[in-house]
Length: 422
Image (cartoon, rainbow, N blue to C red; front, side):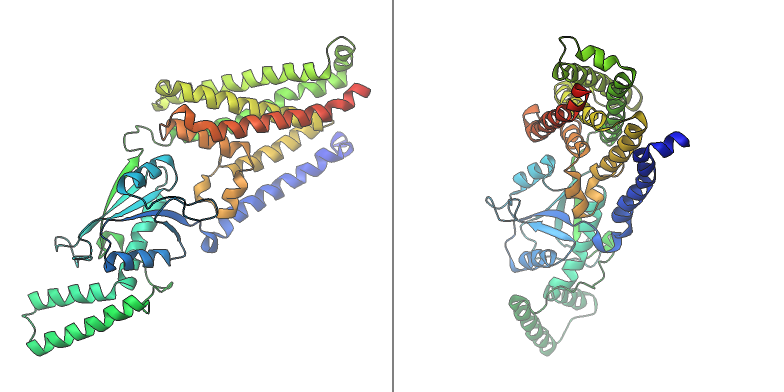
């Protein structure tokens, strides 16, 4: 207790850690009712009719979706031609969106169906199995959009069923129905029958729009989420290992070993570089053991992804090793290092996706996660093991991790100057 009281930094961090951790999870979960992240939906309109346009307009007006008919820039501006079925599927496979909706030709002739086997068109929903929630949201919102944005189609189909099963209408009744339907179609064309945000989304299993879901990512995976958890948990514990190993600097400084080493021809830069190489190797070996365990016990498809794993593993190990060096250089004692590393690593892991998938977080938290090593490492391993992308597709993650590692090492070297003048 006396030692902790003297080390004010460690004492303060002991109280800051639970408060910071509580605040992060309060932001993630506490505001779910009004901060649910929007689902990015790619739409391919092969029908090009008024009915399909009304359905898409209804989806676009829903606040739970980002609807993209063509690729967009980071600012939301269109950056290419409209999606086709092939390019939409490729975009889902690449991770640009979790869901893609294909509206087939002929949808305008039979847009809805009141029950199974009644002749309605079937929409195709392409999805990524790593996000199990997005397809369910889209299917529900499709039913809502169909009911609120296509009233004339609903009325038209309803009249057909009534005419067929009730016994038919008189000529006067048919004329009146046609007149009312024409007026309703004019209102739709003028946009007066827009969607209502408070409308019920409907029961997707018994919806008025038939939807055929097809997984285009993860459909042949034996253990779909094992690679995600291996990367997420692995990166978090790599950071703990790296900070603990880098803490040897503090032990050497306290015992006087560091001063004796620096009195030789070994410079601080060479010393830190040597420790960086050792910690990088240690972190990489730990990551290899983690994924080998996933292969042996949980049937992770490891050996067919060795090139991508080697690239991502070494880059991640380098970044976390430099991170550990910076933490050790910034602290005065082991107690401070333990408290500070725990605080920073747990915050980075919770925001970066090691504890909770980022795509389920509010949008602000998803963007904040990009400031962490965890997020970039997990994204890279996901490309390798989940999406089966080539090594060349890893360049954004590789560039960020290597850049972060270099910057953190340079800062650590500058902070470590204090030991050269002791």
